[in-house]
Image 1 (spheres, one colour):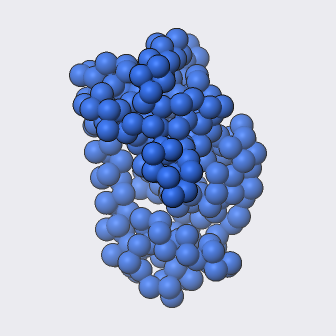
Image 2 (tube, helix red, strand yellow):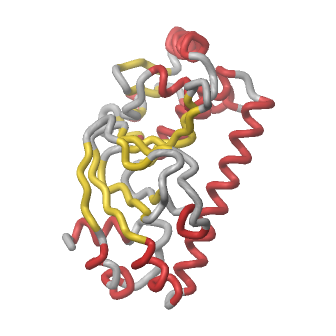
Length: 233
């Protein structure tokens, strides 16, 4: 495998703390996949037979109701692992994974991952920690839907995206803010916070008027994270 891939695997929660030899034991089983925006990696209800690691780009994980409404559960970026639930529960996929941007990924079949995990219990413990963090985040999201208004949820979502994907808008100039290339449409951002596009757009326009952020196409520049953080509480 390329050295850059090895370095990225070392930052994936499942592989953190493991030796290079342990990571290399999986190298021959990893498949590279390049996708373009809109490509579907798997759909809700599909048989789950592999896990994925994002090398570059972003992938959204979402569900669709019977009447066609969509709920965006999360956005995955470089170093993120997804599709792992079917490793423990061989039932059908519980969500759909779609490329938000052009992306490169690695995938690993369960038939190769399961024996590797059995011989490395510390990796199994790390994977359980990843699942526990996902459950904790799910609990937080459920609480936000009940107790936090839409502008608060929008502020929290933007801060979370900035934490994961943000970069200085102007290197060396903190006052210029943090640019977040989230890659989401306005509709997808609304799905992420569980609200209508009109309500989310109104919140974004209000934040922009207050000087807390600046909007761009499928990106946002956060200018005042402190006030956004207070609004998110």
